Image (cartoon, rainbow, N blue to C red; front, side, top):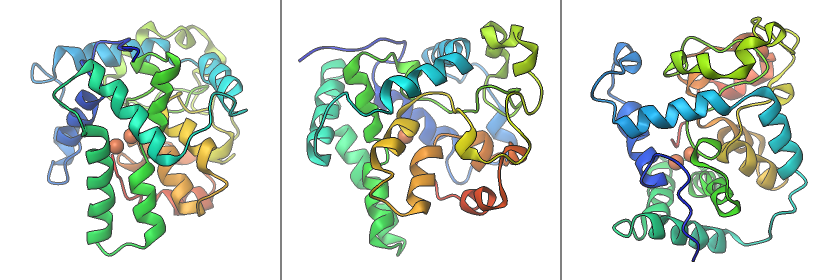
Length: 248
Ligand SMILES: [Fe+2]
Ligand SMILES: [Fe+2]
């Protein structure tokens, strides 16, 4: 098995653990913006790489590369197994962690009384992390997502790291709307590339629309938690994003 660990995190689990702490339900809104010495250095480094490299051109290029869906064919369980194997290699202590994360998410949704399609969505929501198998670095697989091609919200974590993003030098990408029309709709928006966007394209033909929104935007915290970027949404997008159950 190939060991793929192109990034500062020890494993993709480290990302899940960080998100769990940062966005826990009882966390006060004010605490969300606090990044200090308690933020692990590898997480800071992860964000530094993510914010420096996720440009509009990069997002467009990855869509063109992956959306034809030519990289592989596998069932849900095989994808889950493959993901686990990758994670095992980078962190042998977390044998079943991806499957456990996905099962726990699905079980929490079931226990809350939600329908079966929603449970299924929780179960598969992170399978896009198989992007790692094709050599994508961590910063192009996990992490908070955000729209590219327009000004970055100040509510994105570590906004200061966008100073190293080449799009900052392109004035037409730095206006509030950038390349988009007001209310153009989220389907027009090129999100930073990662497991959310990829899995959306893989599964959209098979799932109801609310599930598609959950999968595609579950890491877009500046929108579904911070309620920013409404100016890019149609009324229908707003309705689908609010309230957005968040499987993390
Ligand atoms: Fe995720
Ligand atoms: Fe997750």
